[in-house]
Image (tube, rainbow, N blue to C red; front, top):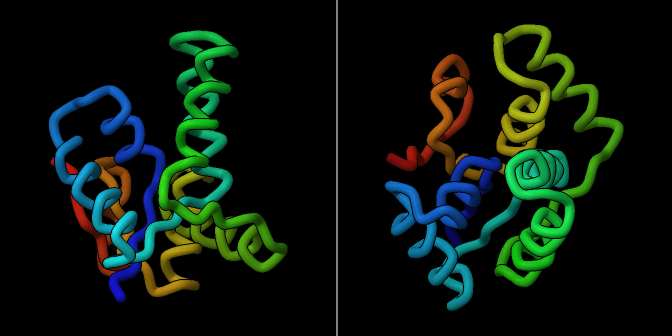
Length: 133
């Protein structure tokens, strides 16, 4: 079964119906039909929360998180090992700490990372990436 990991980008794209949201919708539909496995690291879920909070307030951010939790996406929690692996990735590459968690999780699970964030180009040889255009 195909295994995909979202960072914050594809869900924010989908929620705002930005270019590329159709790809995200298709992945969500396939996961709903058990044709693939989707996951999202809790750190990246927090990233979605704070971005929506800044733009639309606390209530809207809470509503968005509730909506995401109903999607066919497994939320990956934080382990000590993941923290240290993300810290090592952050130390080695010029990416955000939240993005380092997504890279670490993709490495640990063998998932293809789904993103549109160009910051990931520096790690594109380490992990498989499906780019949201």
